[in-house]
Length: 199
Image (cartoon, rainbow, N blue to C red; front, top):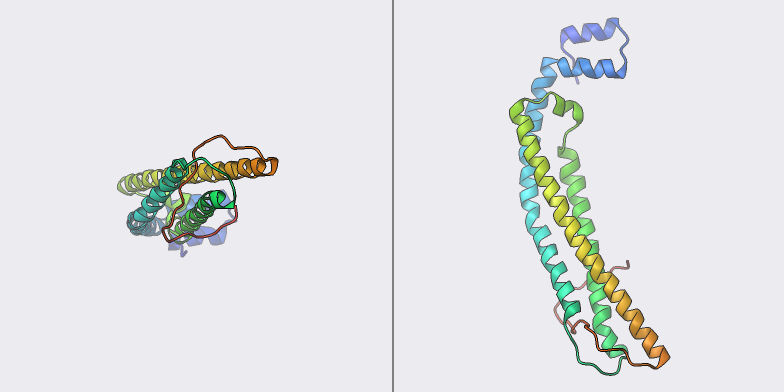
């Protein structure tokens, strides 16, 4: 950053603390103008990136709910062997893969969009009221996006936990030679798009 001539003279004459330097920067008219222009541009770009990412989050949310419903689908009672465990294992694999995709998508959004464009406290402190108002709107959109991601993560985590518990019950029953009470299990799912992830 290049300070204005008057500010630069002060810097040459007097050693400044970090706090004093920041205060000087905030009062610099050139910096204020540049910061407002930069924030306006970055906020517009960030809102565009948010809108572009919404379909991805909605798709992940739908898939998470589909997996949860699949676990609740009833199957016929009978012997519990590898063939009846397979639908649960497949569902667990899909849930782990979806969780991995959720993590990658969120990390990519943060690294490529949110962090580079969010601005710093010094910039925000010198913005005009109209720019601050736009910043508040974008912050609210980000908060909503975070809640959507967190909700999907909770659904996926719940499905993974239920699958693990169900597999343990089936394995314990098979080893003990006892019948498992009729409970809900997922139907065998044949659609493509499964990914593996350990979790």
